[in-house]
Image (cartoon, rainbow, N blue to C red):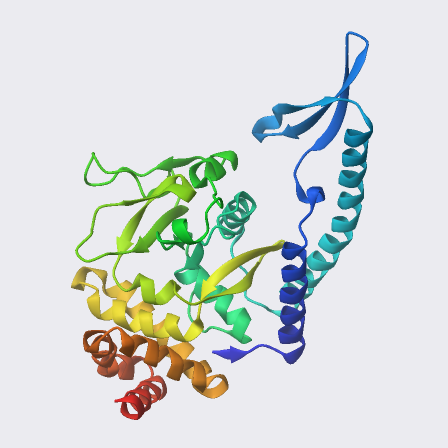
Length: 350
């Protein structure tokens, strides 16, 4: 693990501020498309025109041209001018980050994440998890990880109970992937009667998995209506995504996403590492390595976050904390310093 230069950390913080303001101030000008008029039998009518994949055009009828629609078209044009300046500023900061050595997400994965973001997946409560979240958290914490970060598995987690908490917010995840025209196809599950929870590009490693916390012994896919898709239940995921933060994926541009709390990410990695079977040894090693690096950074910069994450784990019961404690010896093999951090945390909180 290496510290990023202070200048890079400052630029990333500024980028997050601008990105948050940009997302919060969305106006009609953010809508993809344009206002057009058509003459029909001597009368002029307004349509909103959008260009889809492959250059196909779709026009939505708005009504006969009048003062109200003229005003709407003017406000749309003005909104486009204002957001263009914001976008240029954000893109400039992204370029400075890349030049300064910030962690960048690979182009295909970043393209997928932008498509999901544009469709509203993260506004609807989706949380980026897995290695791509680890990359983003590195920039958020101002460090460069020492391990290989090559993966094209895009993992999105979501809490099914959010359907009740945030009514009316939705995102069609399968349609968003289809609109990218990258060749995503549903991956059949072991049970033909169960809906798919994964989408993959044939012949490539690029894959999108939708995940959700398990309830009791639930193992069958859970339908998430707000994403028009099903998600695979996983143990311990509720702890990971209960507390999330806004962050930015950096590549050719910037994508606003939600990522887990860094301290919870580290402890969650230790929990699932202990659950991996022998045939998944390589993934277990990756879990331990990511947890070790995260623990070292947090112990130096944000020790209080580790305390809060451990307390939140303890609330769930002794079995949860004991799973983490069992990783001490395995973690010691990866990083004695990180193992010491964990042992001190366990000793302090019991």
